[in-house]
Length: 117
Image (cartoon, rainbow, N blue to C red; front, side, top):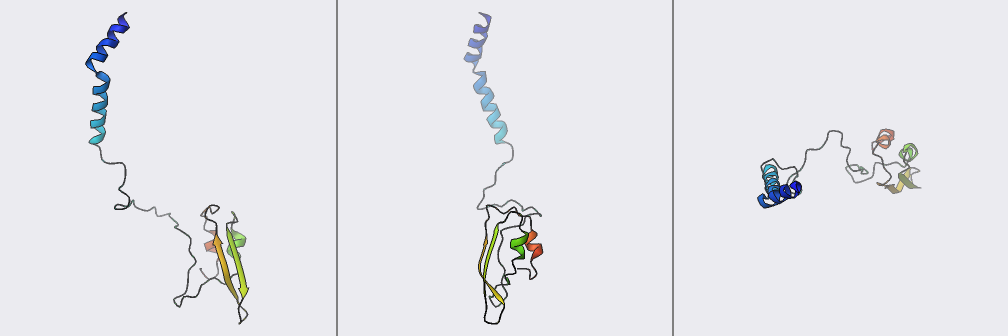
């Protein structure tokens, strides 16, 4: 009986609604927790490695000499390289794929590359 009276009193005074409004006002006055992405950017971590890209020389030629060291050292086996011989006897890369789903961003491919491609 007593609990019903307490519940009726709480319902009549709308304590839950007043508490919810107070909580909303409290969070409205705090600084924003989100970033307005296209217009604002979060600072990047100094450990960020970025997206992989095959570098080129200034004349537009690829740096990759198709030695396949990066393919061999990759622990996730995420790199696929196909090459063909050139007229001068060196190799030319015809296909250089990195499966970004498999990649673990360890950086071993970058360390293994002899020409910093």
